[in-house]
Amino acid sequence: EGCGPPIEADPLQLERDMVLPHNLIYGSLVAGLVAALAVVCSDRKQIDGIRNLFGGQDKLARFQRLYLPGFLLAMLADWLQGPFVYALYQGYGIDREHNGYLFVGGFGASAVVGTVVGSLADRVGRRQSAILYCVIYFGHCLTKHWGLFRVLMVGRILGGISTSLLFSVFDSWLVSESQREGFDGEQLGNTFSLAYFGSSVAAIAAGQLGEVAANITPLTKLGAGLHYGGYIAPFDLANVVLVLCMIYISTKWSENYGAADGQSGGSFGKAVGAICDDKKILVCGLICSSFESSMFIFVFNWTPCLMEPDQPVPPFGHIFTGFMIFCLLGTRVYSYLAKTLAAEQIGALVMAVSMACHLTVYLVESVQVRFVAFLAFEACVGLYFPMMGTLKGDIVPEDMRSTIYNLYRLPLNVIVLMPLLLNFSISTTFAVTTAILAVAVTSAFALTGMRTNKKNLELQALRHDSDDNNSLVSP
Image 1: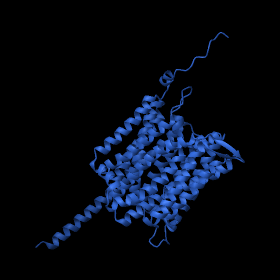
Image 2 (image 1 turned 90 degrees about the horizontal axis):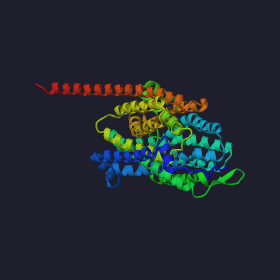
Image 3 (image 1 turned 60 degrees about the vertical axis):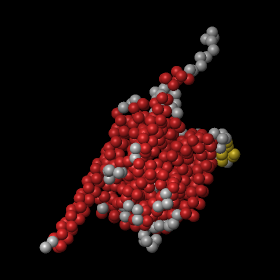
Image 4 (image 1 turned 90 degrees about the vertical axis):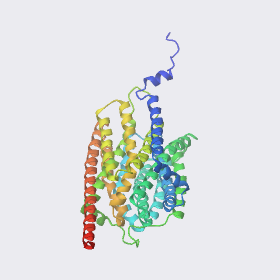
């Protein structure tokens, strides 16, 4: 009574009150794009490489034009559905606890089935396994039409299996074909860099396309748990992309196996023996599992890290775009650094900076500082994938490549399950990821030492042979 009309909120005041102000968010987008452009423009080799990709007629350019469309279609399908999973489950009324169960099902399936899938890919062929990824992921996206927990759990299990295929068989196919074509490590690294540069662009496009698709019609129930529209639409769009991907791979790619005859690819026991016998393969796996598990844990936790009680919800879509721009920047920085540093040296640098980023989140509660740390970590992610693809291409034996790649993912999936099952706080979660990345840092420097020693020994052997030859021809 007598209180007068309600006072409308001032949008400008709301923005000033935000813990994470818009000028920081949008400023970071511009800064990331400018930095990426500066790195490319300062490196004539990168400009020539990008120009050659589209217009070159040499063997490498033709090979890159063969591989990249299939890989990028596969990644686009994955990026299209990724940002909308939580929102769809929320629309179905699934609480956080049951949401966690669904993700446990996905990562558990990846851990259990992944090693079998890897061995199968080495035997039946990487091209066939890439097509299988499209089929299984199609089923995963299709299950999102049902708001029934048991159906969604089947979908998450299919998603876990398909993720194991996505992050093993495509890289395995690329490395095997590169070796068959006679490309060296630098050329392979350039292809990986272009692939994950394109993946970052695909992620940015997927966020915008998915948002448009989700807004065409609202989530609508048909009956018997069946729905359409709303946040299901990005999954339907992903299925269209998967069909295109399957058609492209089946018509354009040749087949390759873990062995020349396609019959004796890498078995599980043989792959485990190779990891135990060769320290470089083991340490490479420690780096891979440690970094990627921390990355996936980050994916689950960055949203609550940037929210504060009684504050407006940040524009997560634009923040995600900012992350992808810095990931894109990282792929370009890798190409720049690869001119002077070996892949393992770049890896040691990436692991150290990544650990510092996660440690910052653990030590500092400021949302603005955490946001900047996350941007730096995303740049490290962009550096990591071409670096690790090059390292694994050189270290992992060809005859059991897919099997070992999936064995690397086994501890990764177990580690990611831990915070989901134990419901860690944000602070505890990033303390854990910092410790995991400390293992990655130690492993990365150990691998650098191993490979440096190997190169020194090879150089000494060459000098010794040269001296012997000189002594034979001297009077």
